[in-house]
Length: 177
Image 1 (cartoon, rainbow, N blue to C red):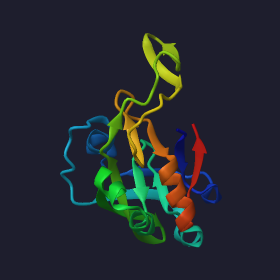
Image 2 (cartoon, helix red, strand yellow; image 1 turned 135 degrees about the vertical axis):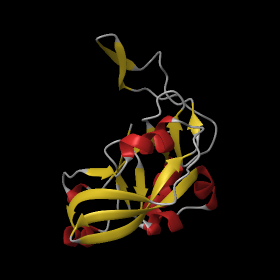
Image 3 (cartoon, helix red, strand yellow; image 1 turned 30 degrees about the vertical axis):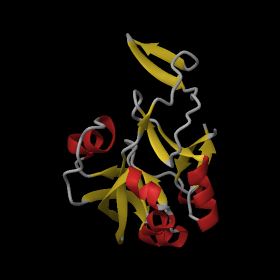
Image 4 (cartoon, one colour; image 1 turned 90 degrees about the vertical axis):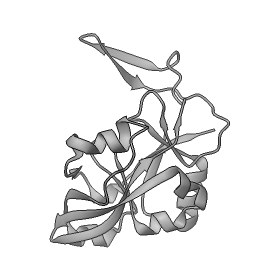
């Protein structure tokens, strides 16, 4: 089974994107704590892009600098029910230069044992072990998006998700891990 990393369209160029309050609650709720309940009704996200450029490209996927996935309504409605059951969505207002857009921030609920720590590469900086080149284990469970159980920053998309993206012509990119 192949795993993929999701990316915003490269035509957007380099830009910053951050959730307001992300350091206070965002990563705990959306990434770090798999048992955390999404207890917020809406999030606000600052995107350092001009709204005209953003609208011209019309991305269906973005990701905050801390790794929280942001989906367009088109992305969400293009996915099957199994996707909706594995991702908790929260309305998100994107604040761009010149206006706002409505999207959805997602908490990936599925955590799997994806990374093979024996085969992966790590660096050691002042006693801190940092995963630098992950090697993934094959899993038998079908999924669309999952986070690694131990290395929560790693979110992987399955071939099934990539097929849905291609079938519906969604505007995002992906690279195999």
